[in-house]
Length: 229
Image (cartoon, rainbow, N blue to C red; front, side, top):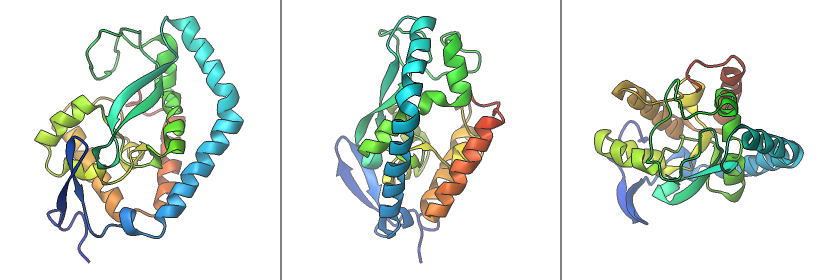
């Protein structure tokens, strides 16, 4: 059977919203009967966390953010989701608040990152509000990480097959992150490696694969990846 990686040209172009995306007629993560199970798992896991942990953890983190610096608790950024449909991705604010600033990637030692923000980014706690995105269906717990719209516009021009990542819902974590590719995208190797792993995930997806990625992501967080900043 032809796959996304063995024959990436076997797609049809489809106009969705404001961007061209690609829909393949046969793909594990689009046509597998396990897709419903993936959605059920997303709903159950995100609901359990938000009800039993988020209900007390989010207010606590919000208080620490407010004490540490002026500005809102949450940071909302427009990102491309499945089929390039735009959505507002939620995060805890980890940088000084400047509503007039243009988009710029966070980098190691970035002076914009607050004290509490450094801790939240290092532990990936800043990503936890995205469980709300998962619950409402914008994201999945596991999938290719969504990039800012400004970055996508650049990457689409520079990297062949980049838009294939948008065949599926973006994730809070993905195979690339489980393999240690986190933080700033500095050189072509960083993005090409992430793209290769994202496409491999889309082709080989299974519920068991998702569980493995979650496990390795947690291990990476616990042992403090040097790329988490």
